[in-house]
Length: 177
Image 1: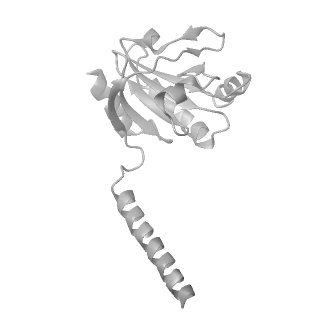
Image 2: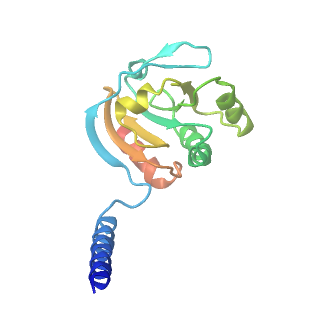
Image 3: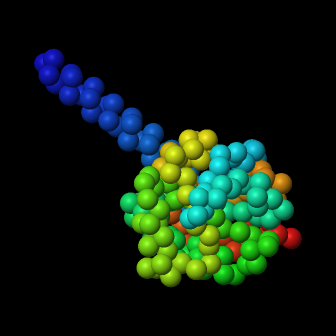
């Protein structure tokens, strides 16, 4: 008798969790939808392949898309060609994509990936200390944030995307007007 009651309670708990999770899932944003934000950009420094330090303020006056990625992250690698195509649609003086690798260790793996996949339009940077993901509270990779011309984060996307989709092209164009 106690075993039946226990099984009934467990079944009810699972049913409640199942129905609540479905409700929560139904209310989330569809894939590839930007999450609007209105907060200061990050202050952590990052480097180029020659170990020159940069900050997001080096890109002030333009719309910037920061994409945090790593060579061990398959979704990151899959979205990189579409990021490259997105950059090719716009002048870097107005809109600049920064692919910031958070791989630890030598930079050659990321550089090789860019060469092997003919990534030519976006600039590669490095944050091997993972300061930026900690600062922006990134829970995983890839994560991308849009920084406006004044250095403020205006939108975020968690997960991979087809960046040359019309949705993102329209978003960038709307921020450049």
